[in-house]
Length: 250
Image (cartoon, rainbow, N blue to C red):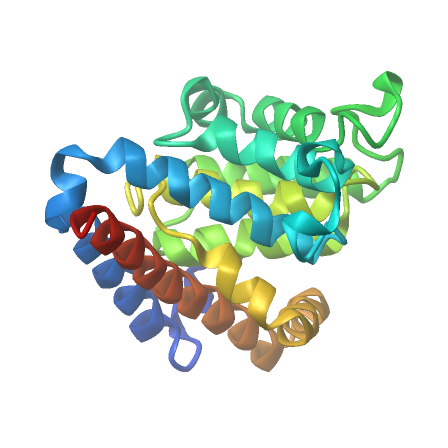
């Protein structure tokens, strides 16, 4: 039995290279002169863009002026609450995630689905024989059982939650929130400046097809998902740089 269950993923074609490129791009975004001291403003804009993109992927309004009161849309409202809870570095959620990831996961669902399901379902995984054990395993992995790179760990957590659908509501927003949380807590993107959600939003068919490939568990399917996520993190770093450049040019 492999001691590190994610180690083989690093050997899939192109994954290690794509992971390194994502890390390097996020590093450049954090070193931009506008983010050396002014990163809170960049993080706030990143959170807003992340919420909009994540919302669209789960059926929220494609344009916020399509609805009279955008915050009144339950999908967008949930995505925005998740993004704001993670804004600038995750706040209290970081500590919860590091010591009790399942509690943090429940908290994210409470934020994401508050206007979509009854209180008795908020933060409660579905009653399914597979859900509990798979969430427990995921919790072990994200708290240090693997030496896989942070982009790969984020992609695995994202893919597992997206395909497992542990809550049966707002699972996509939660999955993308967890991906963001992993990148923050791992130090890959400590201030949450990257916006990979925009890349996924722009390629929804590819995003969903790759998620199905991840669920199938074949080497090619896993590689396609990991590469898509790493490239989205790279593109999300470019989005972060554009936010920083806008701040500089004001």
